[in-house]
Length: 329
Image 1: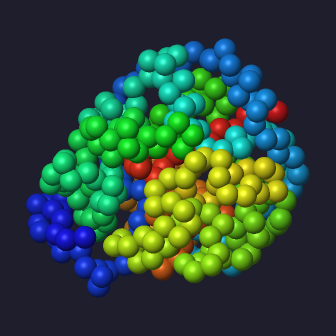
Image 2: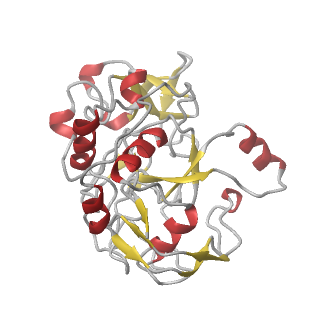
């Protein structure tokens, strides 16, 4: 990877012996900028809803009895009553978000801030030196990065695909799209209930068999040694099309891996541990995300499991974060 410049201007040497750290979404913490005061409901909202997958109401499961990351609040496994709803078969795509922007003139937070986070390997050389995020130096601040120019100015032609998940969208941007589509973001309970596809307390949407780096790649995650080498054994080193790999039992694609998905919930953990409480104190106002992304690997970010959880500030956006929409029946 070579030498990177850290956020404090300190030279940081990224080597294969670098300490393991979380890859999850870095926080912008720049303060929400004022956006459009109202979003008019799309005249195609009913069409979008009708195309979504119906999820039956029943007693659902939340969490797990076998935590992969205990301090993330994955346990205990509990039951919760779920009312019927509909959920997008895929995360919102670039083409769908483009239709929203064309209809409303919406400007995302990354555009209004003038910059966003890009994974180091996707930063074009032409951009030159970039500023890193302390403790997660693989995330770079890139001026001009947004949902169109995902990796920075001039990158749309190479990195933007109509059928891939829209990324570089904040929680606030996701809320605006959901309002236009006549829906909302899922709760954690709804997201997990849909992700399980009727299978119960399983780790993954397809069951209990874990992906690996050699011969089993049912989703889009990292293969290799993070953050230096991604072999792309699953077919992708960044996002895959939103509708790819095998769907789960409810017909949902890419529920884990590919991109993190915003939920409606705040990021909370019930814990008496001092270190967990101290971490949560620094994350007040953060929102919960589910599903992991193409940057996850069991060796350092085992969060591409149904019960896994992550939190970030609602104004943050990156190249591995999107969302899907829920409609209440």
